[in-house]
Image (cartoon, rainbow, N blue to C red):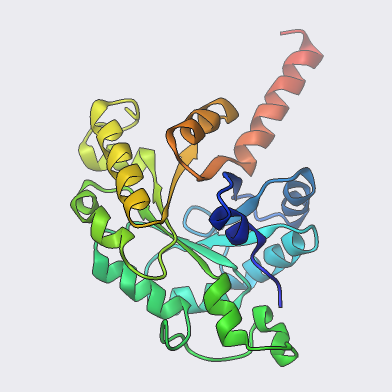
Length: 253
């Protein structure tokens, strides 16, 4: 059974820098692991990958020492179960706006007594060849991050942060601005208010604040503010930037 190194480091007080994987490429997953991202989030909300594909992507990351998480496309118990069984060591769950939704996610991702996840012997249990107590191991290792990306959920951030089993509240800046009717205006004072609330409530409840950054510079600024679970860019963003820079260099533009 594999230890969730990223979760261990997070709770040791480190700041983690991850990346979204949208390209559905085992090779790119391997490269992201080799180059040293603290964790990789396979983005099944905004790509066409499902559990069948993600189990291969998770294998690719694991062989390079990466902690592999999945952003699932919805909050259904069956979705949580299938992505966990495919080998995700952590989940990022979109549009979690109430305490009840957060509690439901924890129940679906963890085994009794912390949850009621359907029992089998998946990849994370070494297909039944594991040595030791897999139930305890899973419950301790599973990292659950829930997204604050809608104004409807902002008044409930404190209650959500207080839910046992929730580790991270993750801000999705773009969706948040959309729910405010100010699409793309991530520097608006109203967004800053939400940032302050999430930082305050996660600290109060001994949890961690997360956010998406568009650049390393922005990621470092977020770290200074107190964010500890930071996803910087996507694989497609970085590949696109590298292609653009290379073409400009070749053509002298």
